[in-house]
Image 1 (tube, rainbow, N blue to C red):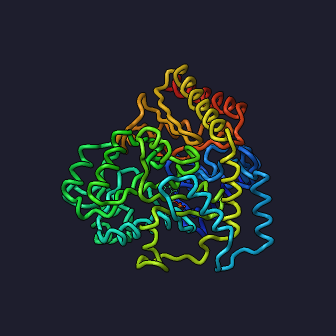
Image 2 (cartoon, rainbow, N blue to C red):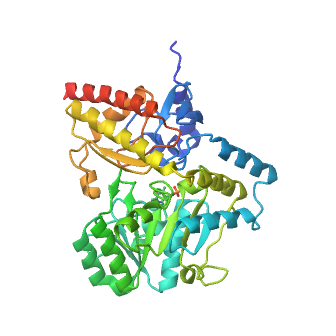
Image 3 (cartoon, helix red, strand yellow):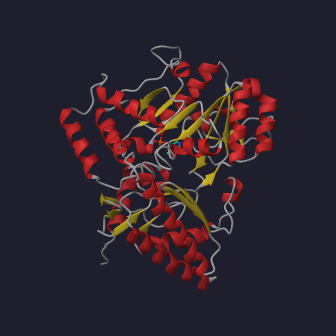
Length: 438
Ligand SMILES: *Cc1c(COP(=O)(O)O)cnc(C)c1O
């Protein structure tokens, strides 16, 4: 009798009996890369341990939130204190004000913010608000950008600019996405054409300014400048989806990165999540007072949530923000992340593997392509089989990166130079195997 000693596999088999695909969010199932998902037992600092007790250096950090690494003492203490005071009240608390004030102070142009529980909810609510505030129905999104799974945003490009999108999920009626126009990222000519055709009907343009859901692709500065100009000119709201990049690529988020290149730059609405909850379910959307006051109970745009502004989640988020706004935090994080990308680039080059990488603050991406892609179509030219070889080679060596080539990676302040060196050495060993097999 053979004994099943892989406890991850045993858990996966059990999970598949009671949870669709064995997971509560699809990418965790390893469908893109094959193999058995690692069931996490516990995490500390830059690492987690799976059901077999194997340690992995964690470059996902819960897909972004864990910017301080796991179990940061100040955050743990804040959460423990909050739990003792109560889990949820369904009535307002001072901590919600403190968190709102912190967020607003870091984002020029944002005067009010509403707290919700997930990025999906925040993006969905921001779209409703944009439509309610402008009295218009249509919106622009870009291929390869993810804004959560609200119906109107689960859409891919239609057959041309005059037509609107097609649903990317069953269960989304075509009528629900008929107002969503999907354009190519970084394509200025297409953007101009879309505004020329539909300008007066557009409520908003929603964009991931540094897209982390097609690995890592920056909106070019000229493209972003045109987005801002065209929105202003046509009375549409520019909505920055910074669920991933907010408090991650810089303290001021991607907004501050573009403001450094485009004087006076700010979006109209911003959507936040991930880092602001520090690993708890917390997200937000905010903007100018005139727009935010359209929300219930002041205005006609309805939005609500039983657990919104949850006292434990806000304690976790506040404690996290107070750590990351300490002087030098982002400089150190950015240096570490850059040294990871530089190290991976050097390892790939030494083994003759085509490689390109980029990073900002504590977020990075890399491609097994000689040049950085500019849009989704180019990202999809990456060789999936080679990526999977790299993924599993790293996984075997105790390095956990996102199990899909279209996902960004994250470094935390708990990652050390030694961790980076270990990662680069592992990658070099895998690249060597890949080049000798090629
Ligand atoms: C993760 C993410 C979302 C969705 O957030 P959830 O909390 O998973 O609902 C939305 N937009 C972007 C850019 C994201 O990265």
